[in-house]
Amino acid sequence: MKAIIPFKKKDTKSRLSPLLSQSEREMLAERMLEDVIHAIDSSVVRKYEVLTEGTLDDAINGAIRDVQTPILIVMPDLPLIQSRHINEVVGSSADVVIAPGRGGGTNLLFLREPHTFKVQYHNTSFLRHVQIARDRGMSVDIYDSFFVSTDMDVPEDLVELLIHGNGAAAQYLCEIDVTISTILDMDTL
Amino acid sequence: MKAIIPFKKKDTKSRLSPLLSQSEREMLAERMLEDVIHAIDSSVVRKYEVLTEGTLDDAINGAIRDVQTPILIVMPDLPLIQSRHINEVVGSSADVVIAPGRGGGTNLLFLREPHTFKVQYHNTSFLRHVQIARDRGMSVDIYDSFFVSTDMDVPEDLVELLIHGNGAAAQYLCEIDVTISTILDMDTL
Image 1: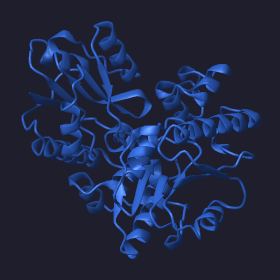
Image 2 (image 1 turned 135 degrees about the vertical axis):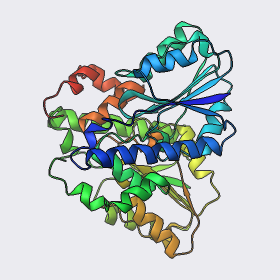
Image 3 (image 1 turned 90 degrees about the horizontal axis):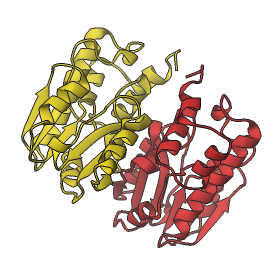
Image 4 (image 1 turned 120 degrees about the vertical axis):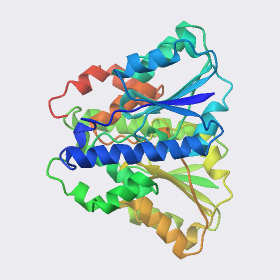
């Protein structure tokens, strides 16, 4: 089994631009990836591949098309994820396990038979992925974690990182002096 | 052991006013309370008290001051909570269990010795409650649940309710024709 992590460094996380410069957003994205890889590295999965090319769906569907062993797809902006989460998700007996993100996202997607599945990450992908699994007669587990649900899209999300984080991404926010007050005092909130 | 639920019906949930009228917000608040009570009723706790008077901290601190048996404090706007969550929280061996809400909130607070604790629900109460417990030498468990973290403060939160909910509050949104599109198409988002 391995994990795949789609990752885009350039022009990423534009909704954080009221708070962070482009180079800071790119640096944050790298640090978050580091946290995600650390969690995978410390889990039972250990093997991973970072996908850096193409659109999200194409990159992932290309990567899983011929894979006959289980795959875990991990979003790269989950700095609060821990190895425990990964172990619990891949330890499920279901055919498909989905950890929802805020707003109907899919933050972790475990596929027991990747070659029979096509991902669709746009819009409310959570509902889509549940439907795709059911249409194929696959059993679905919803993995319920606040820390895994917390991706970093908008400035308020960074409050969660400052409150709950202790990895590379949280450390980076300290380095560039982003505090809870900095974020909550922003005019645009 | 019992659960206490602080509840305010009047002038509640003002940040939902771009989407819901005052009477709709009050009705939603009641339906959410119904969902919370249903979860408690189906859990090992079963006994509960709804606190309707005073400010949040005063009402709760008054209610727990002389209590020598464990207490679970449940916020009333958690329509995605299930009895499983409550059983897991009160089954912890820690002195204090906190289920964080978004933005540093405290959505569930389990106190093994309520009379030795004073709650402080304003601002980032999560950090405060962790600190209060540590200052008293109490062990602290963080309970990690997306569904419990999801309280209903702003219109986007109702998207989570529509995607993941199947209780009285979710049903109410259907009754008044609030859909995911209604919310995402709002000008103010």
